[in-house]
Image 1 (tube, rainbow, N blue to C red):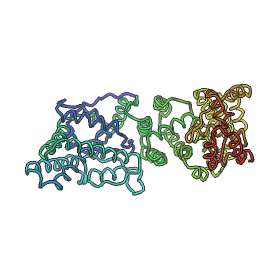
Image 2: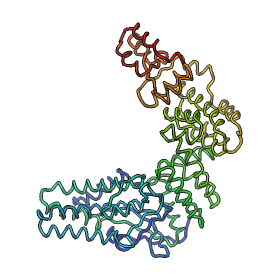
Image 3: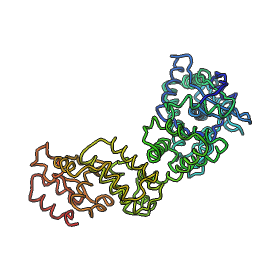
Length: 535
C-alpha cells in the first residue's frame, strides 16, 4: 500500500496533547491490551524522570484521523493514551485521599499542591464533561452491562467497577499497579511535605516531559495505511489486532457490519486477543494453509483484498468461534450440551486433558462442512489413534503431525474429502504409523506418571486401551483411578517407568497399596480387589 501526501507530524507534551484534543477510539479498534510488562516499562521511564536521571522521554507515536466532528479518531496509540489517563486518574485519587485523610497533618502549602494536582488532572481528562479528552470504543458489555468505555469512564471518575473481560481486567490491573507504585514512591519519605512534593514531581514530569509525535492523517484511509505501515511486523500488537485493522480497511462502506461481526467473535472468545489470534490461525490452517503466528497477518492480508472476501472471512469466524470456544473449554458438560453427543465430547475431553491441540483445524473443517456428530466421532477416533501412535508411543515431533492434520483439514474444507471413511483413509495414508513401527517402540516405552497434567492422562489413556476401553469413562470422566507402580522396590531405576510396570488402582486403595512397600503378597491382594481387570 502507498499514499501520496505524508502529513507533517506534530510534537506534543502529554499535558498539551490531552488539553488540545478530543480523542475517540473507533469501535472497530482493538481493546486495551497493555499488561504488566508494558505498564512496568511506562512506570520506570516516569520514575527516571522524577528522580532527575533524565530530562525528557519520547513516548512514541500516535496516528489519528480528524473526523467531521472535529474529534481525533485514534487509529494507533490507544494503549499509550488509555494508560496515561489511568495514571492521571490514580494521581488525582491519591491526591484526594491524601488531602481528605491527612490535611490536619500537612501545611497549607502541601494542601494547595494536592488540590492543584487534582484540578490539573480534571483539566486534562475532562472526565466529568460531556466531551472527555479520551473516549474508548463502544462494544461488548459485561455481566454488569458495562462496555469498555463505561468501565474506563468509571475508573477515571473515581468509581471503580468489578472487571470481567480481558480489556477491563487490564485497565483495572494498570490502575492497581500505578496506585501501588505512586503510593510507594511517596511513602519512601517521612514527612507529608516531602510526599506531596514527590507526587507533584511525578505529575509534572509526566505532563511536561513526556512527549509524543502525533500523525494526523488527512483521510481515514490514509490513517489505516500509516497504521499498517508502522505495525505490520506485529512487534507491539497481537496478530488479531492488526488483522482487525486490515479487515476494517478493506470493508470500506461496510465497516459497521464488519465490526459487528468481529465483535460477535470477540464476545464469544471473551475479548481475549491471544485467543482470537489462536482461533484465526487455526481457522486459516483449516481453510487455506498452516502458517506461524508471526506470518499470519501477511498471509491473510494477501488474500483478503476486498469487502466481499473480508465479509466471507468474518462470516466463517462467526460460525466457527463457538466451536473453537468449546475446544478450549474446560467443562465436559458444556461440550456435551454443545455437540449433543456424549462420545464426541468425551473424545475432545481426553485430548484436552493430554493438552493436544493439533487436531483443531480438522474439527473446524468438519463443522464448516456440516458433518454429523456421528461422523465426527469416527474421524476423532482416528485422530486420537494417530496421535497416540505418533507422539505418545513413538515420541516423534509435532511438526509433521500438525502439518498433516492441517492438510487433511484443508481437503475436508474444500470438499475433496466428503465422508468419514475417505477422511480416515487419508489420515491413514498420510500419518498412521505402521503396526511394526509402533510395536518396536512400545516394547521399550517408558512414561513418567503424575497426579495431574498431560503426563498423567497420556499414561492413563495407554493403560485404559491395554486393559479395557470400557474403563474410559470411569478413568477420565469420573477420575476414579490413580497411577501406581506394580513393584517399584524390585525394579532397577532404569526400568521403573516402563509401561509394563504401571497399573491403575482405585483411589480408595492407593494409600494401603503404597504403605505395603516390599510386601508383594499385600500388594497382590489389593490388586485382586481392584475392578480394573473386571470391566
